Image (cartoon, rainbow, N blue to C red; front, side, top):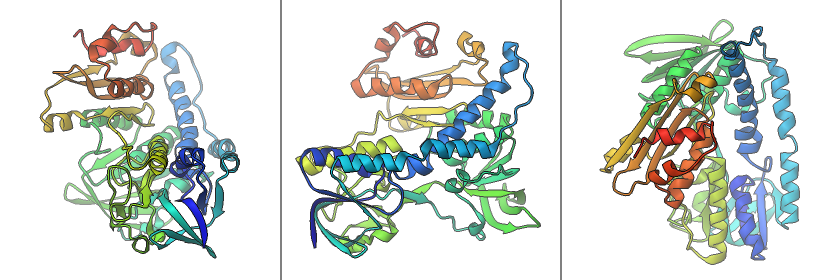
Length: 451
């Protein structure tokens, strides 16, 4: 049996985040990864997706060109060339990460590890014993219990297909469906989104989501919520999706049907019972320090954490916390309250902190500043199709507890509000700041009212 201080299951952002603190402390580390180093985000997720989103932005700008007195012909997107560009931009990431791990003296073991005991991992023909084991195995598409689900593809497939489909149905109205749906629709595909719940993106502020839905429908995306999808079947050429909406059975035909139901922790092959790791249907029970509640030698970070958003920067953040807890003992806890997120549609929806409904449900006394900025000079200058914000301020402390944007460079502005929340900067202090003008940031004063 080989001895290590730390064995990490998974070589994505979370696992890589662990290696910094533990290697600085001189601990021996083995990282087990059977696929590409970097995991989902740089290879099959946020990084390649943003290449497609950037093309969507270019098409959006061309759409608005006439407002600026610019006449252009109708653009045509070479989808195969776009996918080739995406693959070219990300192709060196795994090798660069491998060099980084070698520089840190982390032994990368190719394969898939599983528990062989509470402090042991088996990978291939090797048996590793560790003082600490980290589960950083990432996520996988959530399986859908729908007859014919084998006909569906995932976001992984969409990032590799070099032919633009004429029509696409997304089953599920989450981030994947909206982000890819906007790119497909702007590229000329007919897009339909079917969501089981009453609201798209159910964890986000309902007013912000309503704004995004309206602009999604403006560009031709067909959206139905409160839907029950019954089956997916092969028709004469395309696929047929059968669903019930408002009590009526309906069908829609599409060249591609995409599983847009989100992702779940990828822990099926880890053999959690052998590691004495308590879990509920793959959701690992953890304490405030990201440790297993039943086996304190086991730590969890990244998409396998059941309480945090499955986002790349959060995975890296959690990995660093796990690494520091391994070195210092269980003293570091994650704080997710001020972490901003964005849905990279065109325009984007950005959010940090509480939704208004959650703030009111928690009994907080709040001032809610809602702004439709479509007619503001800055929005008119750039011919924005939508420019909207909602900022929630706790009345007694004057501190920001939530902010939500659609358009108006919200995916950038949201980080300022996350910073304010983390360091206790008040709404009054934000209003009193002098900003470069004219910028979208300088509009923040007006977004917050006069105080």
